[in-house]
Amino acid sequence: MKAAAIILAAGLGTRMRSALPKVLHPLGGRPMINHLLASCAQAFGRLVVVVGPDMPALEAAVAPHDVVVQRERLGTGHAALQASPLLGGHAGDVAVLYGDNPLISPATLQALLAARREAGLVLLAMRPADPGRYGRVVLDGQGDVERIVEWADATPEERAIGLCNAGVVCAPAADLFRWLSALKNDNAKGEYYLTDVVAQARAEGKRAMAVEAPEAELRGINSRGELAVAEAELQQRLRAAAMAGGVTMLAPESVYLSHDTQLGADVVLEPNIFFGPGVSVEDGVTIRAFSHLEGCVVKRGAVIGPYARLRPGTVIEPEGHVGNFVELKATTLGAGAKANHLSYLGDASIGAGANIGAGTITCNYDGVAKHRTVIGEGAFIGSDTALVAPVQVGARALVAAGSVITQDVPDDALAIARGRQAIKPGRGFKGKGKR
Ligand code: UD1
Ligand code: CA
Image 1: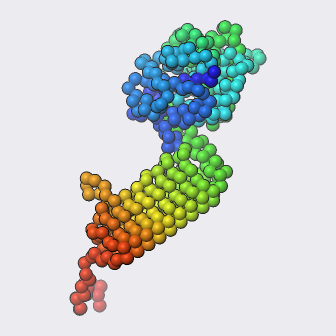
Image 2 (image 1 turned 90 degrees about the vertical axis):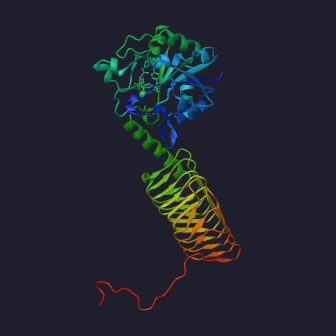
Image 3 (image 1 turned 45 degrees about the vertical axis):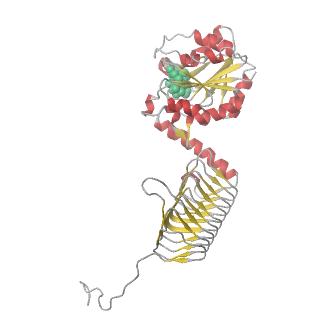
């Protein structure tokens, strides 16, 4: 029987000082709980998330996994017990994990499950650079786990122990729930500690064992400072994976990636680039410095930036060019088309090989609704053109610089829509500084 997992996420996360439940704070552009669920889904057959009352956003984020509500926050042991109606009769192992411990790899979870064959209870432990306020793992003479002592309850000698509880335990379902229902709250915090199940397992003569993994995977997140440390750790992993896949980064530490950023081979990233969620970049693309991309597809050989902004729904077809201070939203830029300077292109479809002059603006919003602009293949839009949508410019059409286009332009036509220039001889500037 495949093991099941209980993920605790009912805590308020008071140390975050946030209106958002702690486990919804993002890492790499995705709520931390969803990182943990993704790893757990690879190791466990069923996931149950324990949430607090009035956390609708959290319940939505963890769907379609099962949710149980912990009505009163009486501690981690009490929280885990709330899953007993769903998992009490589970025929295999059950692991308990903390939602604020999101970077655990599937491989470490597999190691935990494998170790269960050798002991009645296994837990994940680490040796952090700064053990801080983690619970300490007390070992016996054989190197087995004797008990876990919470920092608040620990003696100075116990606080000196470097082996820390990462907050993941695993045992057969029947044992785990029996131990959980027998927990007491006679401790410094007056809470039912999950960690006390270790002492119960030992009291029943069972062996308890710790599986060690790196701090980078097991760190807990209780504050914004710890969130930033975890983010740095995740970014390092994402960049390393991108470079291993054939991406050149001129200054890796200045590139921010999302958990799902897809970068092809021979992509070159200049310094200072931000990737929001949902970006896919094909082979041979160059993204120049200070560009911001989210929810977009950049196809083979395109060049983006410097200082470009690609917003959701944008597709850059092969060899397209987007230059400095150009913003695209829900727009397709055709193969080989260019928009190189100072433009806003929103809700537009731009044909292959079209040239969008500097300062071109699609006026897509009339204050109520959004409207589309369609520009045909090989069209040439002169600089400082306003395209008042809905409007279409035909293939190979030429729009004169400075035009305000309010009517469709047929294929191959020239459109000029601007005031005529007047010349008044002798009426030049006669002010100060003139000789
Ligand atoms: C916990 C462990 C500690 C370990 C550390 C690892 C206990 C008693 N302590 O401490 O040994 O070193 O994690 O990061 O387990 N939660 C609920 N309901 C509650 C209380 C907590 O769902 O009533 C959830 C929280 O949302 C959180 C998780 O359980 O996701 C852990 O709770 P937290 O208060 O952060 O425990 P720590 O003090 O970090
Ligand atoms: Ca914690």
